[in-house]
Length: 191
Image (tube, rainbow, N blue to C red):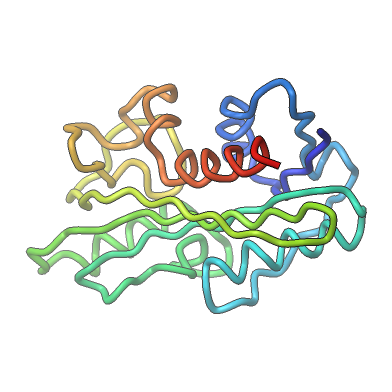
C-alpha cells in the first residue's frame, strides 16, 4: 500500500518511518513535491490533523495520513495544547516555546502534563481518527539532546529521563505519536 505522511517535519518523519512496516510504501510531502505549508487553522488537535490529511488527499488522490500533537499542561488549563508549536510566536521556535512554558510554570507546584497526538487517516476518501497519549511531568530545566519540541523538559511517567535523554528506540515505543500510529496501523492491517 502507498501512503503519504503529510508532514514537512523531518524529525516526525524519521520517527514514523522507523515504526511503519516495509509492506507500506511511505511517502513524505517532499517526495511528492508538495512544498507548501498547510495552515493549521482548526481549534483542536484533531481538527488540524484532519485539515492536513484532507488537503493532501484532495491534491493527490493518494491515501494519506497526518498528525497533530500538543503538550497539555494541567496547571495551565491544557495550554499550550493546539498552539504547542507556536506557543511563543509564529516563528515556531522550540527553545522559545520551552522558555515561555518554564517561565509560566515557575511558581506552579503541579507540573503534570501529557502529550497528545491525533492522526487522521484518509483511505479511499473516508477519514478516520486515532489518538495517542502519554502522561508525565514538566521538569524545571532542559535535559538531553535527542528529540525535538518539548522533549528536553518532559519526563514520561515510569521513567527517570526526559524524552530528549531517552534513546530514540525507547521513545519511539512509548511516545504519544507511536501510540496513535500503532492504532492507525492496526486499522490498516484489519481492512
